[in-house]
Length: 241
Image (cartoon, rainbow, N blue to C red; front, side, top):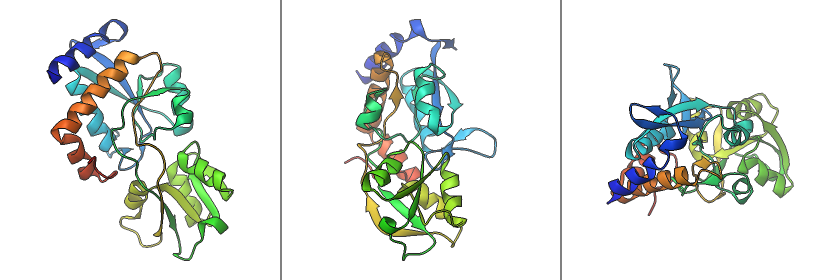
């Protein structure tokens, strides 16, 4: 029954999308700069949790994925303008974003947000906090009335702390944990904050069939346990209960 539902939903997309090997082509937009969620590997290809997840979702929905990278600060406008068909880039579902685009069901629960600094003595409320522009982390720091400095890329936020421009970085714990591997300069503070309602795929509000197709594929991965296995493999968030 699940396969029948997925196939029927996929066929509904065929009329408005390009075809490859008999399958509809879906352009998957991602940042390619947020390991372990998405990054560019040594071969110059999109890699990471969301690459593996997206390819599996497309396979289950009988779609062909084409991967497109886009800078984070324009990733929503370029979805709306048609440069790709989905956003799959560690994007938390928020009410503000949902006013502009639609979302699938969450494919991970919310990842805790943490601080990384050069010293465990840093007090985020009294320091300068670096966050990536357009993220829920930047919005949180601004809402607290703390001192915020924003950067276009996640790597720039880390460089700001190393270079003394900021006292701490505020970002997803999974990204920060990956950034700390193999170095002993930066350290993670004990303070954590829970933000957002999980991570979902961004879809244009007019693409209801595409949203429903991916929802069915995500649900099938939840049902058979393969989504939790992928989350555990890449250590991007807690698993679904």
